[in-house]
Length: 383
Image (tube, rainbow, N blue to C red; front, side, top):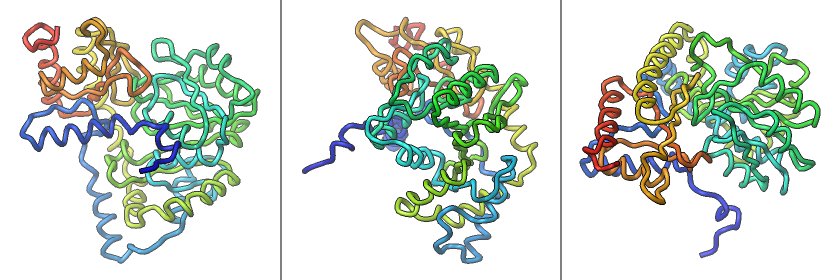
C-alpha cells in the first residue's frame, strides 16, 4: 500500500499517543495517575454548556460562514485595537489554526525558527507544509536571542513564539520579545505568536502582548484557543487574529479544508467570551498554588526550572536513567512500575527531560509525586 512521502516524513503526536495508551491501561483495570495530558481538570463553566445546548435546541446545526459566526468574530476582534471581524478567523482549535498558517505561508525549503523545547506539532506541521523546522535551543528555558539571530538565513520565513511555553512553562519577558520583534522587522519575517496559555501567567508578571507594537502587526499572526482557559478542549474552538489579507488567505484554505467550524460549539465560545473574568482569575490562582506544590516535589527529585506560566514542569531526569537509557525509556518504566504517566522530553526536542502536567486535583497530584519519590528511593525499582 502506497503512502505519500509527506505523511511518511512526520511522526504521530506523542502526546496524543499517550492519551490512547492511558485509556487502554485504564480499560485493562490499571490505575493511572495522568501527569501526561495537558488538559485542565476544571469543569466547563455551566454558562458555556447552557449556550451550546441552547444553540442545539434552536437548530443551529447547519452550515455556517467559513470564517466563523459574525458575532463571535466581532466579539474577539474587540481584543485587538483597530481590528474588526475581518481580522479574525475561527478555527478548529489553535492546532488547526497553526496548520492552516504553515500551509499558507510555507513553500518547499522555507524555514521556520522554533525555540526548543517546543510543542510536538510545530515541527510536524511545518514539514507537512513542505517547510523546514529550525530548532534553536533555549537557555534555562529562556530565549537565546543571539542563537535565534544566527539561525536566520535567506530561507527563513517566520519565527514562532509560544509564551507561556509548552512544555516548559517558561514566560518570556517583554524586553526579550521586543528584541524578537526587531529581528522580525529587520528581516521582514512573519512572527507567529501561539498564545494557548496566555491567561495562565503567575507571580504577578505583567502580561506581554506582541500586538501592542503597531509596527509589527502586518507581520504578526496571533493564535489563541478556548480549550485551556475555559476547559473546552473537546469543543475544538480556536482563532487566528491577523491582517485582513492574511485572514483572507487562511479562510480560502479553510474553505477547502473544513468549511465552517462546528456551529453550535461556537455559541459556547460566544458565551465564554463574556464570562466574568473572576472565573479565570480563580483558576489562575489555583494553578499557581499547584505550581508551587508540584515544583516543590519535582525540584527535590530532579533538576527543575521553576516555570512562570502554563501548567507544566520540565525536569531533567538523566541522573535517574540507567546506562544507555533515554527519557522515553525512563517514562515507560515510571508508568509500568508506579502507574504515573508523564511525557518524555524527546517528544518536544528536549531529550533527558520529562513533561509533567500539574493541572490535576490536588490529591492526585500529591499521590503521583509520592509514588515517584518512593520509586526513585528504591522501592519501585527505578534507581
